[in-house]
Image (cartoon, rainbow, N blue to C red; front, side, top):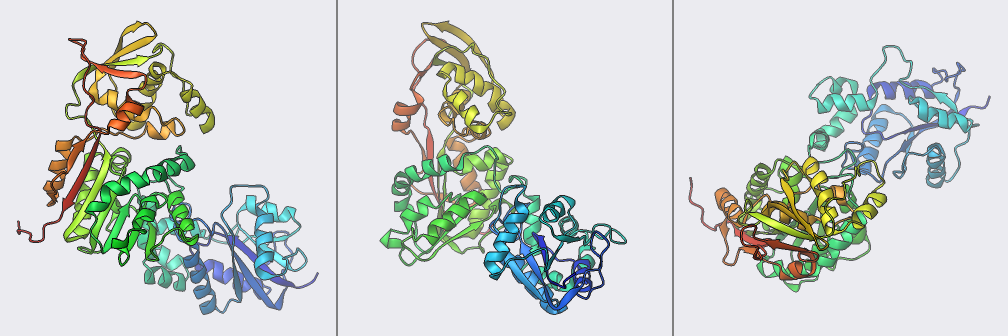
Length: 525
């Protein structure tokens, strides 16, 4: 049997353990048998090929450490250990029976030569993955699988670290521990793993259509920038909840901000990746545009008193919806106040709850409210979207009343009081009526939208919250009604009526624009 020249070691490699280094060292030295019990004889110039999988995916519980840090850690560990190695980054791919082929093809591109069963043994402890390589004809070295003492896999060691178990420091290779400490990766991984608002794959929700979401945000960016631009203070400008960077694209074209640093921060991996892609394509006129996947609720992103302008556009209702409601908004406000320079501003634009949310109204809707709601959770997103899009306004309200309470946690109390002339009338609170009307047109991501509450805060609530953390409100801040939205969206097939008089109810304010400034001179409390 010819001597082995390559040991292919596929994995995400978020951590390198002391056991792995010792095992690979023994493998290159010919002291290890493969899964079939045959001695593995390696050539004197044999090297370990670390196939770094999911290299294009980071910032999630599945992949908390970015690929460039993982690659640098592997290089640091193997250099110290004297373990001849090469690193091959492999793009993140969905689960596939051709995964082994993907890794081998990527390795051939990077190394300039194929890895073949004649010159390569695969080191892998995951039976399902090992079976894929075995099917390609490769010998398998089982690493931790079946080793004496059942050594912890790297992911288990990582979970020990997240849990605060200092045993991870003795299980990981010393150079990996030093690398984690040098770049504070232990703190970063803990934040990613303990973020209560983000799914395992790095997003607020698994039911959002990001293509539709990004397109809608981009379409509104011209209007949003025109609204906030007069209030922006040059310097360090931060757009929290930046999505794919639509607002910063407009900011980067503003001559007033030519010398400013523009930062986009979003919790969603999908959106930050798209923003980075746009930057690589030269979309942003200002070269000093930066993006980061962060959650400001988990800890400060910027140093105290370092930001001149913070913008939040259509963000605060998501924070309230996916977090702890007003408590998280108060935490957000405190964090933004802390990182704002004296004289700097926080500009917030979002949907708003009505001033009198508990007022009872009749919501008059076209169609038949008797159509029963369906359980959409098990349906493919496109099928669920098509079903909701096909419902008339009254039937869609019935579906909303089924989905919104269980997903958002908000109560929906109503009764059908009339059904005549092709209309149905639901008697409910003004808040419930507005929650429905704000939500009903977003059928592409219906379940995601039904998780979100738009009416948690009134205009007075916002004023109290902002002044409570120390901001001063600029003149003109406060609620306003988007009459285009009323005319083209809210009143289509719908009306509000007073139950007692039958008279129309005026449409409430729909949005808030607050410009909150940190005072130049602050009075010590």
